[in-house]
Image (cartoon, rainbow, N blue to C red):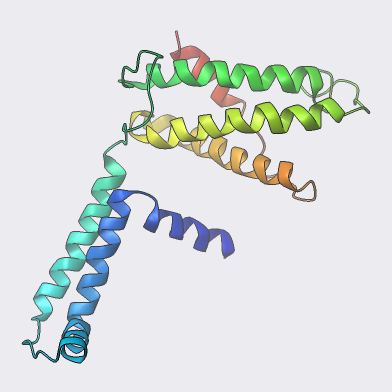
Length: 204
């Protein structure tokens, strides 16, 4: 229940589209219930006529429309495809930015992670001091950039890959929480290996 409420709150206040939609819906509800008239009358001692219910319902419908539109239009305001500042144009550009970050994370995990094998099946390492340091100083910052790139360019991700990238974001969130508190476990949010193949294939 907590996760659902948190995700719902993020949807409502996430970006300018969401905030505009929330404002329109709130105005619509206020108009239907006559709240605006009561507030104006109490504050300014000015009587204004009741707002027709159709206006309130219209504002609510407009808010829902803005929310849907915001989910359909990709946000390209921050992410860039190169050091020269050219904007991300397609999924290939996005993958070319994600690949070095994923590769760096894999390097740290392979060389310093709890298991020595590249497939996490090798002998267990007992000295994890370097791992604990590097996961906070390298993996978490890389993950922050990955999450930002994906969230800012969701509209460029092909529909058949949506679920994999959602799993990637969930893993990043869970891993960050685990780094902050080792008691936080994330067996249901493991790294989706399929994303590596997708990124490598489309980054060429």
